[in-house]
Length: 467
Ligand code: GAL
Image (cartoon, rainbow, N blue to C red; front, side, top):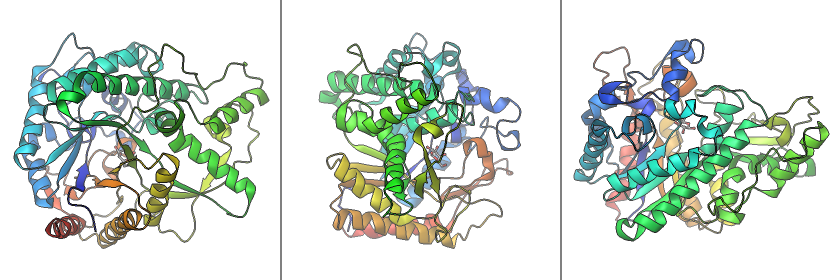
């Protein structure tokens, strides 16, 4: 049984749904630039229009209401609010848009959870070095303060940066997300470092300037798979799984929740690999200095995005070039008993979420946890009667229930990714995660509830009526 104030939500992000990429004074973001380059995204699609939520917000609100959500997670487009990324120039039309969204939600009894940064850096800031430049932390802090000041009287749940671990790796190591850089074994660590500094500055600003009056809570969202040793009796596999967890969850959770610094296992693996390849003696993983904000303790709750699980064995490397993959020296594989849903990376493993929640409780001193994303992808032919996805939500929510009741994890909320089908980054519109289907071939971009949307609404209503 879930507590009376358990948050039942769904999530979206600005670039994936809003469209209006040049509307009313919005500045370009790195995702606008990236998608407009040929060959970056599936079929060269882009988020210029996406679900057109910039113009069709009322339709989204109808979906939120139809589901009976208690919470809706959205992100703000930095470049819509501050077109050049700085507070020198505020785009009032952008402020009006988000004011309307927030006010409409509250008028319907739905609490907004707001992410400040979900992958879409203003292009102007990218041109000045973006997340690789240390100065970005102060610019982010100014943006965060602007948002707290403008919306914080009504928004009580804030997330600074969505999945810094994914953002840094896919954008700067693999080059498959904006800004599309493939600078293996180096830049992702620098970017991650500046994201942590930026996050911590924003948290401290909230803490000292806004918390007393606004009484909200601030965290950052971390993506992680559940990672088990392939052979639980094999010490090499156990070591590989520990390294893999340190490089995914630990990279950001360790500094914030445990020690103010990166997991030791991560630094020693990176440094050993540098030594092996004769790279310079300075660690590729930056060190925090006394001039940096204090990182430890800068989260009021744990925000987790969980999608799938993996079994882990040693990477068996000895590559001749630097990469995060060789640093980590682990290989993550699927268990053949796990079904795959839509995208090839996503095995359906609801019990992995329970394991991960238990691990978070034990490792990070039993924090309050919000599952800020969890979902089931669909590709190929459209199935509005998505029976498998219905089962997925039922069993995942039952695993969350067990984590609370049997393992004592303090889970405060569960958010489905996503409210509706949308622009799935490099996969474009080819991958559907929605509780509502959006018909992108229809000029009206009509929204139709999936069977799984109805199922989720039923689950929510059942739990609400038990209060
Ligand atoms: C997350 C991301 C979302 C969404 C989801 C599904 O990593 O935060 O924006 O794309 O994955 O793949």
